[in-house]
Image (tube, rainbow, N blue to C red; front, side, top):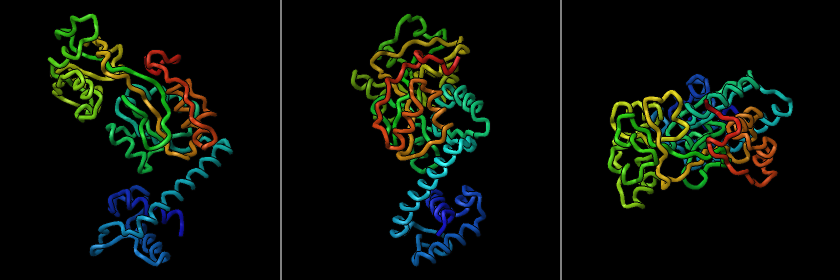
Length: 327
């Protein structure tokens, strides 16, 4: 039994039993992957998958148990490599970050640029996705860490580290009736207009829906999008009033007016989520510190290694960060 065979097994499971896709993900040939799977099954003495003809149909019950242990073994092997590289002071490799489009576009560019300057031999791979998909990527082992926001409790799926707090803004064209306000619109005033916001706003459990419902109101969601730039595009097109993250509005948006969102809409927190017991490379810690300067890299490492209870400092508000991430 080899780590390669276990890695191929996990790749097959995570590719929906699609051998071709699994082979692409692990940079192997399809015949080579199938051969390694057969050798592993021969050694174990039972089939890991049920088959229909030459195709894999499902993961066998015994295969589920093997798969669970295989994931643990591969994770620990990765931890050993990361620990050894940190001890050697070897700062080359790849950092895979799962995050939302808003974080990728408006929060991370200068931070990643700083990480690249400090660690020029590191390649950074961003996997931008919708809120619900980010933690799924982390759970499947497709990312080293995730950066995601919530308006409620801390996200699940690993060690959650609070990075910064932010609020939403209301965005309208300069000719829109709400543009005449010099204050935050009320929920009732927002409810009178079609709204454009993030995809997550369509869910009944979203903070937007819950806030309006608590006031006895129903938001008119005219359109949703994953990307804040798309929200702004359709605000400009006159399709509705934008409700989006404050980080997404910048000095180039002079043709639009940004108003504070109603106080009833809760503050959001952006978190880093790291798989438990994960040994992070030094450049991953540098990225987290770059987003949230209040974090101590040594404390981060000790918490992730299980040697310190997490007592994170108060996450600053976006506008209070000592070193602004965007201009």
